[in-house]
Image (cartoon, rainbow, N blue to C red; front, top):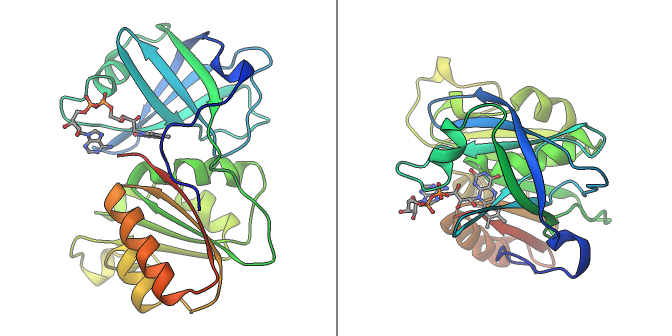
Length: 231
Ligand SMILES: Cc1cc2nc3c(=O)[nH]c(=O)nc-3n(C[C@H](O)[C@H](O)[C@H](O)COP(=O)(O)OP(=O)(O)OC[C@H]3O[C@@H](n4cnc5c(N)ncnc54)[C@H](O)[C@@H]3O)c2cc1C
């Protein structure tokens, strides 16, 4: 089982590179995307992340673009008074940043077991990159508070064999998207997901990753769990 602490790799991933902010796009009250120039020979595997170095700050963000794309795109959650997210949300287009990477091992590992991706909020980011690289046929549970926080729903619907938006705040039936579950991803895992041994990929909040890992141990014996903790 792999857990989500910032990983260390030898060699090129620790080389500092300068990237330029080329675009910012608001997705909802809670999140925005940024696009950065992609340095020459910056190769990555979908699911990997980059680290920003900004004064004394170091912050990691999963790449959402596919490996064939010209830019590095990121999905960022607005954090109230967040030291670095407030810089990313307000910097002028053309601002330059130092990064290292790619980092991380939260990558897709094909196996005979069916893959089940589980995300909360912006934890969907690595799965967007995987879809853009052509990975398909997975189950995806995406946990959000409200339907408007379901980033990349059409991308996920195209690639997943089963896409289940899990909406935690009470929402009128006629506002729920097709196939949605009213509740959290862990409630869905406990109550709805067929008990088949699977490869689980968990990404997002610590509480979800911990709770889901325990549930998988209890209900999905002989499964594998890979995880990436954002916060
Ligand atoms: C491997 C890895 C990949 C990551 N990928 C992404 C990603 O793709 N997108 C993304 O948005 N974040 C991602 N993160 C989280 C990111 O690195 C920052 O921690 C986050 O953006 C907050 O940074 P900040 O400096 O703005 O907030 P800080 O100044 O560090 O925190 C300010 C306050 O907000 C709280 N806080 C911090 N993060 C969150 C959060 N996510 N939600 C609610 N409260 C929070 C802190 O406890 C603190 O009280 C990732 C983290 C890791 C380790």
